[in-house]
Image 1 (tube, rainbow, N blue to C red):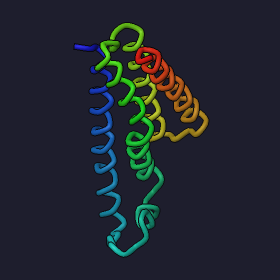
Image 2 (cartoon, rainbow, N blue to C red; image 1 turned 120 degrees about the vertical axis):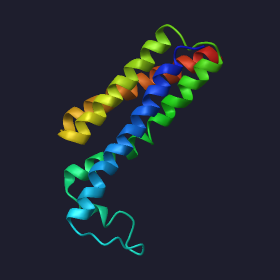
Image 3 (cartoon, rainbow, N blue to C red; image 1 turned 90 degrees about the vertical axis):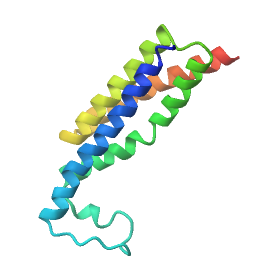
Image 4 (cartoon, helix red, strand yellow; image 1 turned 90 degrees about the horizontal axis):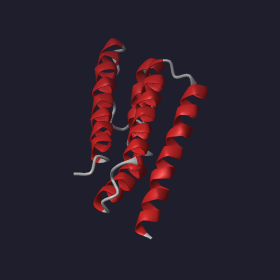
Length: 138
């Protein structure tokens, strides 16, 4: 079995943990503010009334459903092609570590410059995997 599947599974688990963290903070905040959920309110308008520290978890969960899809595609392609070991696995673990660090920064202190640096570094790791997958294919 390709060792690159381990970081894929770990990032998927992390995404679910972020979802749980989001709801663990969002639901109590909704109750504390006595927010009455309105199905006709514009998307996101009611959640925007919650405290920033609550919204940060939700923002990060959304981010984990966006850019990592490129990582998943490249990592799974490498695994299918039999190229999911060695350096590719190391790059995949680097990507996952950077995404987890990005999550922790965004969900706790939300320091924009640090968040961007982590995002940029993880993007380079994802790009490296994508290029390596393309080179393996061609």
